[in-house]
Image (tube, rainbow, N blue to C red):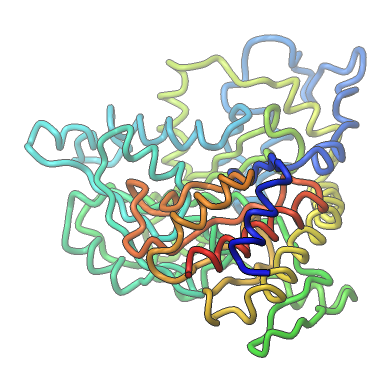
Amino acid sequence: MSLQQQYEQICSRGLSLDMSRGKPGADVISLANGMLALPAEGDFKAANGFDCRNYGILDGLPEAKELFAPLHGINPDNIIIGGNSSLQMMYDTVARAMLVGVGEEGCCPWGALFGQGTAPRFLCPVPGYDRHFAICEAFGIEMLSIPTDENGPNMDAVEKAAADDENIKGIWCVPMYANPTGITYSDEVVRRLANMKTAAKDFRIFWDNAYGIHHLNSGRPTAEASGALRVVGQSPTSLAAEQDKLTNIFAECEIAGNPERVYGFASTSKMTFPGAGLAIMGASAKNAAFIREQMAFQTIGSDKLNQLRHLRFFGSFEGIVAHMAKIEEVLRPKFNAVIEILVRELGASGGEYGAWHSPKGGYFISFTGNANTAKRTVQLCKDAGVILTNAGATFPYGKDPDDANIRIAPTFPSLNELREAMEVFCVSVKLANV
């Protein structure tokens, strides 16, 4: 059967599958259903006796800060608990910087640059997270693409740009199991980010550690150069050896004498309920104090009953880790299926049709096909009933200069739906190359 005939046969099935975003499926969300009964009747007081039904506690319950502080590896006093969206906290942080600055002495608000006939700029490792880029576009911040490899962003390019241009005010980073590449920044990259010279005194690293404990590696097959599959051992020893480790950026910035350089972001969106989770921001003591001052004009406090609900559900950070192990058991077969089908249908990674990686964690698989095939592949998938993230979305302004990168999001569909979707994807890749 020809490729065209295979494709037409697939189109005749009338599929309707959505893989456009990294959403957890009902199978993952249901693992947190126990939260729906929390906090229990009459259980509305924090450890210090505060009534969580009422106004107050601007930046989060002390015990909630303590619970989530390990996500950033900092003192709980420097944690700010927000609403359900870390993206909102990132947006607010950029908006605050544009309007009033970042609290750096002698520096004007970033938005003041527009009055000087120029604009603030951000460094954007690519391929990267489209919503980071959308925030920059919303505020008119110019974006400079920075290439990445298996260690993270190209630090020679980052250091040169940051040192030469005082209008470069920040860099977006998804440092562990990155969106979409799945790589984790090396120790050297983290230290160079902390130590590098910047022309702007108010330069900030936006450290979006969204997937810091989202491991996928236990028993996960990886594609070898030959195209064969290897299964990673499932013993506790091999699991620990296979999990990526990320150097603490806050500690490195402190050692480098740049404690105010980094803002950290995380959330429980892919741990509990995406629409009813908690956002967790980390900052230096000085940055946190400045942010709280500004927040006081914005809110009287986020949903403390939801904070209490998470406290009761998890109990401790060890409870979070145990819950994430349950999520891993659900997600690993989906990532296995994607890799298995890619290898079976397209050959080894780096072969005739493109390259991909086998991530040890996170939510995505990044597929880099041949030049000028991504848009066509995505359109062919759409016409066959499979919606993918738009080609180009992983680059600033939605423009992939090679038209090659496609983000695969395996988490939302069921395993059977995912297998169908990957069949469509592989046939579409081949047809786009023809």
